[in-house]
Image (tube, rainbow, N blue to C red; front, side, top):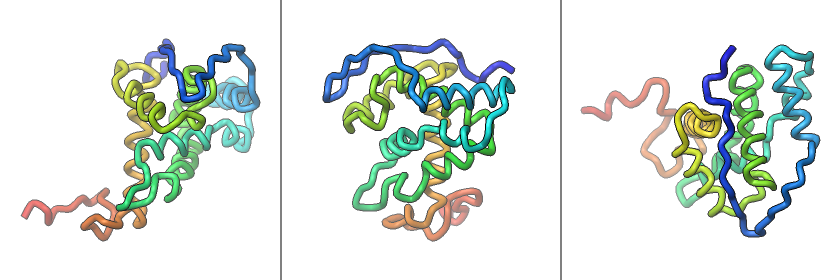
Length: 181
């Protein structure tokens, strides 16, 4: 099965506040588990659900969704209402999403040297901006588009996110037909 995105990895230099430039490749536990989960999703090896869950980068995912939806005076951040946990559970039920998260965050780790969660806020915003501008069939763009869509759907499904808004129920699936009147 061909993935829905171009598997050629795109690279650009990214410096963070610490200016880390360690380029020594190492197979961390997270990368090993990500590889194992990817192989399992592709049918290459048997893998327990626990290993697949461990391979999902929950800290980086929390940082990613908080960059998309940070806390402000109107509401909590995405991770504060559990969006990253909702996405992790969704990925366990959807092998394509799980594979996209594992491969996408492996790519992000390769670009940042220290991982997305370790970047400062300005670097995170800049990184997501660049991902959103990449070609539509690239892994980074597919990851950005999917996480953006899933993040906002999960966020606004939670009543804690409605504070400061003139709504009293989730915007989807019914929408607001009375708004047109």
